[in-house]
Length: 150
Ligand code: SF4
Image 1 (cartoon, rainbow, N blue to C red):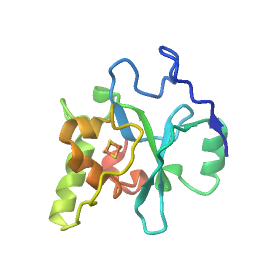
Image 2: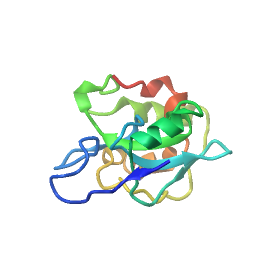
Image 3: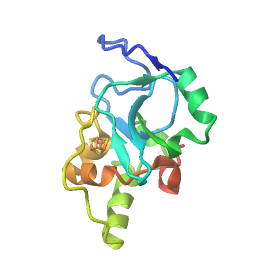
Image 4: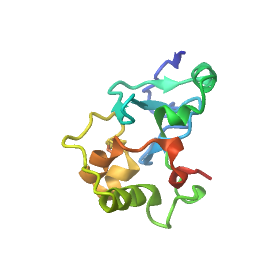
């Protein structure tokens, strides 16, 4: 697998990454230009990746050989708001359902906030703050119909 050269220059960021005040989707598809933000561990919990890694076509191709990448990795992309069917009109419905589901099932939130490279722009964090980060390790994109993007 390989990663594209991370390009931090203003105005030249990947079109898949939030820029110019946009928010990041923390449960995005595996697409060239997205950021790899976590790996699903053997225990089913997401291990965050604290380094900025932009995936490329080769990564997507290689990762797809072993199944759906979104079942084993978490990716950060651009929040497209109303162009996503999870958008409620003013917020992301995914994390609200995750938080409700955790409460219903008495799933204990993580004690500490994971290290995260997209916290500054994260849609979920901007919406519900640290509670979302304590729930984030439980979110596997492909295991939930809640995150079926438009
Ligand atoms: S919810 Fe928190 S830990 Fe998860 S991607 Fe957003 S900022 Fe990072």
